[in-house]
Length: 284
Image (cartoon, rainbow, N blue to C red; front, side, top):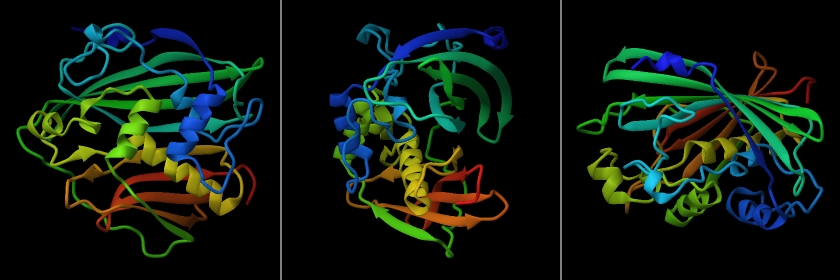
């Protein structure tokens, strides 16, 4: 099948973060030092990921828990799907209880051969608008791979030593369940240990990439006192919750003159799992 035929396809959706939902998101990934944003108040960046849940009947879910492909997203015939990374540029903040729209476009579909076999990369552009203005421009990168026969992780990269901030975030099954719930994400690698280990051959449950990105965004805001104007992130190693073995998440923020902002990392057991760059239009 010619997957490139999906390039240029669009869909539009309407979303809103209601006050009760804002309280749930805050209880899961929010800064405990801050109050839950109320109706009309600005919500932290990246909370919009909870506004467009993949709502479909159970019969329309694939074996991995994702909605079956072939509608908006191309019907890639590979068993493993990952949100590899993304880029965002922010304008005005979104507000609790204020509706906003999203226009999504398949920007590119690329097939490659890697060390582990065939790979398909799908890039999706999202344009979010609220109160008559574009407020977020986002590029989401999704990668599809063959299901492996064993766990073959990428090489580990050590966490940086020189930082302007370092935090520890506990990771447990309740956290993974709550993030899956607030995003309505049924991907089984995050909550179904037999599936994660026996089908996708991870040694434990997989910690959500978008949740790690949300922690990095929160760290960037905490260091500088305000949210960045742009934010890019990508996963470099799976973060895992292995019963009786896994360490908590480490979050590190480093000054970066080259990026005019911060480089940020999540890590586990001394190695990086996700890296991000946060930039501001003016020096903070």
